Amino acid sequence: MNRQTLIQTLPKAELHVHIEGTFEPELMFAIARRNGVGIPYASVEEVKAAYDFHNLQSFLDIYYAGAEVLLHEQDFYELTLAYLQRCRDDNVVHTEIFFDPQTHTERGVPFATVLGGIRRACLEAEQQWGITSLLIMCFLRHLSEDAAFATLEAALPHREHIIGVGLDSSEVGHPPAKFERVFAAAREAGFLTVAHAGEEGPPEYIWQALDLLKVSRIDHGVRAEEDETLTARLIAEQMPLTVCPLSNLKLKVVDNLAAHNLRRLLQRGVCVTVNSDDPAYFGGYMNQNFNALVQALDLSTAEIKQLCENSFQASFLSETAKAAWC
Ligand code: ADE
Ligand code: ZN
Image 1 (tube, rainbow, N blue to C red):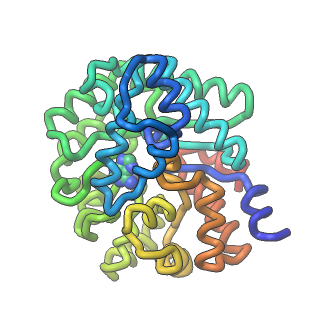
Image 2 (image 1 turned 90 degrees about the horizontal axis):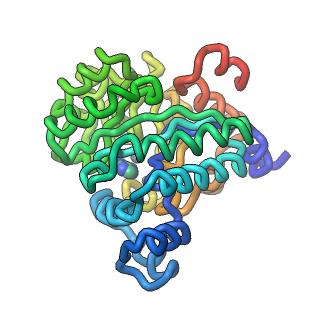
């Protein structure tokens, strides 16, 4: 079996995908028209041409603008169902989806509207295709600690539908330490924790995510390699990194995929996983990320299998469910 077929065939879990980052331009235009919301592009081609980023912030500016089109429960449902269809196509059998409530509540869209639409699609995908999902609510780190506390408060009535909290948005200048207290309150309320760290930010942010936020996974974490003690700790603790190769390429975290450290980290024994992050913006869903990696890094069959197995081991599935896939 060639490696492309192997990638297609193996069951996989996705652990790092922002639902707002799966908003394909075609759907964005359709929902914008339906909602009577203007977008500053004349065509899908113009939108795609604007997706030329030089760093994380240049992407986030466009990503938040795109999300402004989303107003109603039906919009969040259609967005999520379209992503889950891609999961079905790529044989992603389990997904842990990030959503950014503040991007929507700040515009007056109720928390329950966002969650309701996402959940309806997840339930339908499980019934129709057997794809399981868990939801992780992210705090926007460029906003205040108070705003994060208000978001946590809004989530409490929906506690049973949200497995964990995360931390995303502009990394540099907004260290995990800023959210130590809100993460403590979230853990107290029963949420698991994850955080973006070491995407553009320094290894120190990864230390903080581990020691102050007590995360179960690090999202990205590719800059860990700059700190040998930290890398040794990630290996010893089998702390997963949810790595996003095409994202790292598009946001210029790496100059080219051949220079990506994913294979080195994997060979050293770090529990690395492959994920799509914001696939509508970065040019690929799960299997496109895998295929691009195979091309650039010449991953072996055993390495591809290890990455797929890691995706389940690092997931928030029960041990029984993990065992069924590994
Ligand atoms: N929000 C969506 N994608 C993100 C990323 N790659 N880093 C930080 N915040 C994000
Ligand atoms: Zn991300």
